[in-house]
Length: 390
Image (tube, rainbow, N blue to C red; front, side):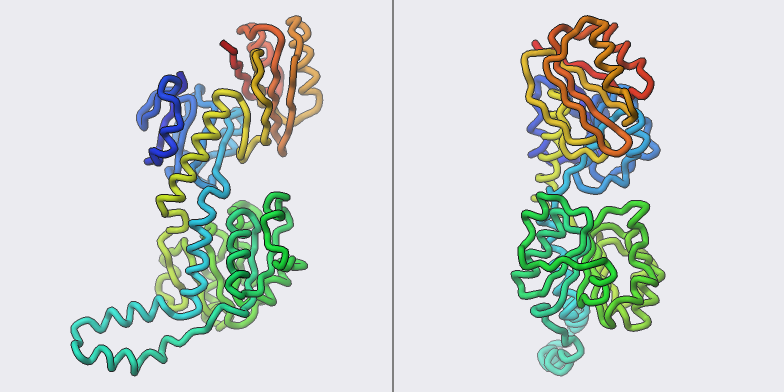
């Protein structure tokens, strides 16, 4: 029986994928084998030794202490692409809001309540104050071509925009999904200098934090419109306010407003609605639960942020799972221990990602505590787990 702790409300569509005779699920569960989370911060949370995995029903993992968990061999999953359509639709809406002054126009029109027969006359007289442009024929720069960036680029093209993309780390899968007519920008600076609209879809990390700053704004066309439905920390708010006041940035549409942005009419603040649709929440929950079930029952990994994807079909043999630091001679030490225990390897998969590696080993023989303890004692091994076939 696996014990699953939920830190936020998780869609029942996802939770129903847990087999009730194999899983116990609750928010207050003790000694969980795995944790399901959406937005709750885990940085100050005590995470017990029984935890084998954490799954985030969403793409970002800033609320999870990934490095600390990685050092314990705990796999951290996210759900890339599950909320892509939801964020894409809001990004497209953001472009229209930035272009047509709809946000201000609606607020003004509602202010006419109580003026009776004057309303029609006032609307006709003042509508010129809210004139805006069309997006068709304008140049859109998309930074980050993951599932969301690709979807935005493709739909923007279908709306008649001229789209350029920049992503030095684009995956093969994303490249296959990208429209052939989306132009590849020669560099980030080139994209910034030529775009009428810029939308960013990259994760927040030490390399991307504050990537929109005074230096980058100085490269942009006067009147550029910037959309941020990725993470607030990507944009230096003081610098973008300076760029707005200088007339460089005409509109900034952000899903992550703070106090420093709310006083400007050039900022369109949205209260973090990117993935706030029932469809996105269901998709994220289904993906997160499916990944947890596969990992707990077979040891296979898909969409971990700290360990490589590993998929080896289950056999009728017992299976050993090992997470270790990516240093030389780990496989040699592991196989040597198995040989000493007179255990033959029937199948094995070893992969690494950055500082960490993961092994799936099917054996001809039975798993015992002595074997697992010997493997755990190897310097650099962070996690050992056995799956015994019935």
